[in-house]
Image (tube, rainbow over all chains, first blue to last red; front, side, top):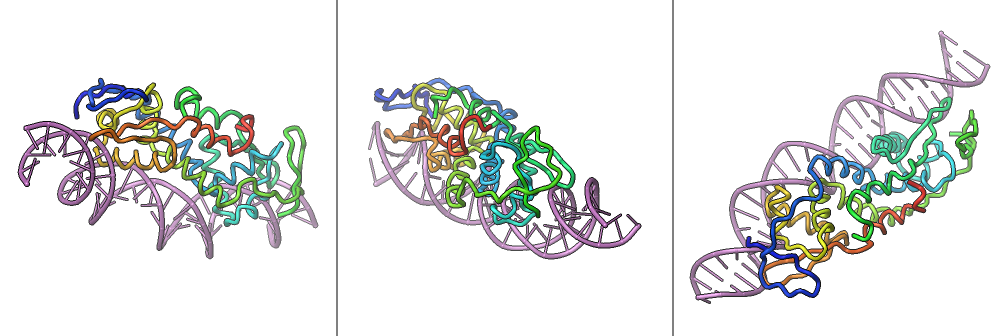
Length: 119
Length: 119
DNA sequence: ATGCTATATCGACATTCGTCAATGTGGGAG
DNA sequence: CTCCCACATTGACGAATGTCGATATAGCAT
């Protein structure tokens, strides 16, 4: 490769002559962030999170199995992933476990990728 | 399972007696959304996207291989994933391909998960 | 045409992931 | 204690994923 310039939208660049880019994200930081996004990278977990976040209060885990259309162990597994990603919190009351969305956690993920104007 | 109520934060609920939840996200919609998040669920792609989004203009693909520390085919593969997820766009000029972040696409992903207040 | 360069695709590999049935755990009721 | 229920864990399976080397494609220059 040659040395590229930053190709501004109107700038016609026939060759590649810019300076090297310094990565905006360290690998270690990227690994942690990616785990957060990975928690939302599955349809079952997305619907699970949407179910929990759409409720004003807390949601009993027992009420999540049927609307998801997956087995109880699968739902339990996905809830654990969401919990360990910090996207939801939970509390045991008696035999039941209640879940709720952690406020601001979703926005924090995208905020780490730069200013909101940047797609 | 019994019929649970919505457990409000202060509400003491010993039993589970709420009505069934209707899923806020359809499975088909969740699949498409999950693909978007999956594009950001890998450290290499996250750093790739951050590199592209942090630049004011466009970025030549050739300048992304070295800071990422992966082989050229691997970088090409990840760029394709980001492109197909709609997170970046690209344009070929001569031998080089220039990339830039699609404005608003990242915010659109989280916006589909409910009001911004919902974490 | 040939040669060089930037990027994309292919093939193969180890690893991770989503899912389920079966089983384990732990709390409440009797 | 025993029984039942909600939830978690285990083990296994097929499927998807990230990575690379090798190869193919496409554009420019000569």
